[in-house]
Image (tube, rainbow, N blue to C red; front, side, top):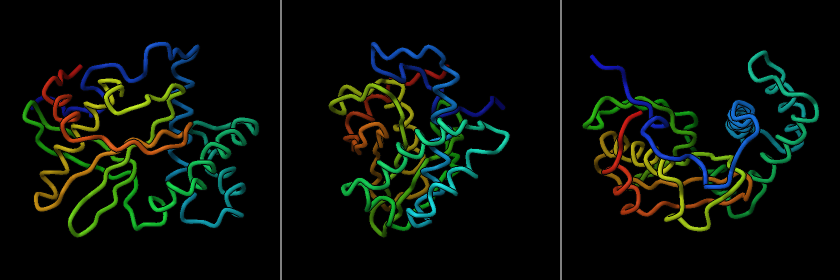
Length: 194
């Protein structure tokens, strides 16, 4: 069988025009480190975050310098302390949720950063650490919309009796951007695996 599709490899830009990184691998590393903090810190009181962050960022994979660790903790702390985002982190949620589904053009295999499951709906949240943040959903880069559309299509198969909602959490804002269904549906219709 053909290899599975990755939601992040469905084609399209992942950043706004003008956002250039001197070192793309460093940007990816920063994102992975931040994801690790946002996955684990919410289960602990804020007073424990500095020690926990130091341990989480000290491993051999993506080891952070003390300066990087302080910057990452400040960014994660701003997300977790934002009053309008607090409900996302106090609600029972699944983190780094592995998902597999038939996307029509192939089998999709990926991981959703945070999934909040309610009796009538599910909310899939993906963390994005882009430096430039779009001001409205229509301006979200096509590659990110396709990624979220793939998650939405997969979740509709897993939860056929619930409304599927999709959102991007911009860590540098920090802010939550809910994605209207028509926008992600249009992105899925133009998906071209790369």
